[in-house]
Length: 573
Image (tube, rainbow, N blue to C red; front, top):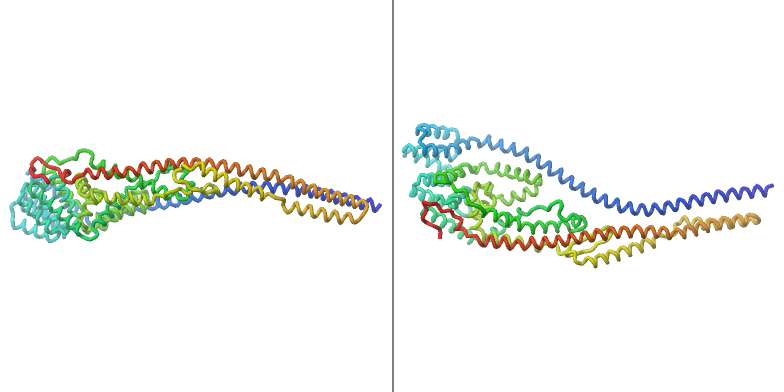
């Protein structure tokens, strides 16, 4: 009876052992499948994390730009309110100037009225140079010489440069050639080309628009040449001028478009450098387009000397004074931030390129540069732009060549590609076969490593060893225990053999997964190299446009951009 009980107990143990072996077998199979799934999920997670990081960086940058744009919009309102509070009364005087001249032409206002208005402005705008100048102008109209002389003297004391140029324009408007020459001579004698005041752009406007006639026209051109000769004799001047123009041209570099070579930008490790080089090459088109549009079309010429002088007087008196410069500079930077959609770095680069505009004085060559590139900030006309560019063409060409040479030096020779775990380089996509073979070799090695890594798990060895040990131990009991021990050992061996046979399935799955990954990588490589070929073609074509810029600039000559009026008989040689 005890033998039967013992046999039943053994059978019960065997059944539980077989059940446990089945559970272990199932779990090991599941783990094997999960290992492959985890590997795939790891690659997918890495790609998603990379995309998420890129999107987060873009979000942070966009949020920062949006806040900067909102801040700039708010601050502009504050700055303009301060300008209005501190200098708003100057605008009244400025608006009155041409009004007095035009009213005098029409003879529709009494001289006493003009005299009263100018006296009130003298009282309400202390220390402003234009108020006593208007008093002198009204006294001149009334033929009150003593009052006119006192007004002129006070205006000169407050701002000699603007006063001299103001009365030069008034005399030209009245066709008083001798007086015009004396006032212009006085203005020129005060100028230092190394530190010239901003209102010189009005004189340039007068020259470029043909307002100064006869001897005054020749005198202006002659003095300008003397200034530039004196500047060119200064050590380092030419280098400074090249850098100044290079900075102006460099800010014309366009930004990369969102749709520009998306695959190349994603898989090239040096994509930022590649896109920078592309934009630098595209700048040639922008620069050529800028100068071509500047010199295309007819200029709108005022119909008379009176109208031309009124325009210059408006520019002279409306061009804000030195004490306003800090506020105007702050306003300009905030406006640029808004224009650049909150990109403060881009706005600061543009502001730095035109920083000399917001200085009380600078050298005359800088005035030419700023008149050409930032006419709105200086109040320069289109005619002055043309004159300034043509007169500066040698410096512009030198700066342009410097930029082109710099960009060619910084152009990445190769694109460093990284696709999943493979990396390689290509110059223009022409080595596709070599890279495809290297990719195939990379994945062959990766597959070989993955296949070799598939081996029996510790669980299989534990089951085998445990089955042998336990079976051997049971067999020492003799009798039916031997049979039970053999069954147990056979079951453990069968499980071990099954796991050994299952290795082929696991290796096949690993191989299949990596082959699929290789196909995807090969497709990406093909797309990247196609975009790289297009990229090199575009860069080469855009870089060749640098010659168009040089050819256009070489065709310019400053004398041809000085307008001639019917009453002028003297041309510039």
